[in-house]
Length: 149
Length: 180
Image (cartoon, rainbow over the protein chains, first blue to last red):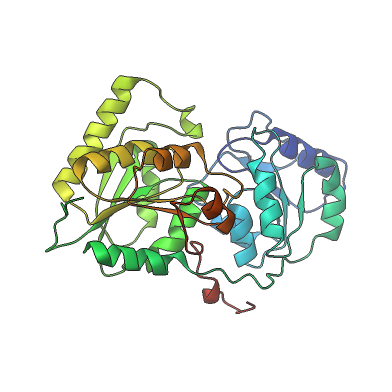
């Protein structure tokens, strides 16, 4: 199963593209889409708008196609084969900046342009975290909380 | 700031928010003072998050202010005042050690309520914010509404010197196969 997730907002152009690839027979796996508040409802994929947790769908999928939000990290930490796409339907472009910064720390399949999705699907492989060793924020947070107690 | 908390039975209040914020909170919270009970404050529209959290001493549902699911930010001043007042009442009653909020828009009214009630507010900017803070983050930073302001990328510390970069909300060493 391929799981496509767009987060809490909308990413109609991604859903349309995936739907088209299924209809054309380029994607042959079963596809499940989480479409958020999007207005395009796919015809060739299962879909829902949102769930309180998408973790089970991520775990069950062989491949995750995700917008450039927090889910990218979840896929990396679960060693999930994934493709991340910066949501350019939204303003501000912070997703591309996030994916770019992340790709310098871990090996990440990400694209900005939906035309590149087909090629990314051909090349998709597991993300391998590489040398990223940030501290655990909980350490400092607990130290700070103990000064308040 | 005078310590307003209930030091005999300390608690920590957390603002719950869905979507990616929930992923970050879920990752962080198990390691935050596990011996101190937590109080959750959550939007009524996201109350299903409560069932996903263990060890809650109590929870409060507040009328939603903001969120893309709810159609955007409510700008009515009366709405804001009512929300801040209801959160202020919760904090005055519970007297937690601190309030923790991560990323979401609903942090702003809660940060104001915390300030007014004398309870320290800790803001953690989302890990997805790399080049700049979110609008919520900018406002909390600018108006000094937090006792501690965390960012999760080191370059943000340079842009916002009063913030703290102390790593990320994940414990990387805790990965199953230890490839790091």
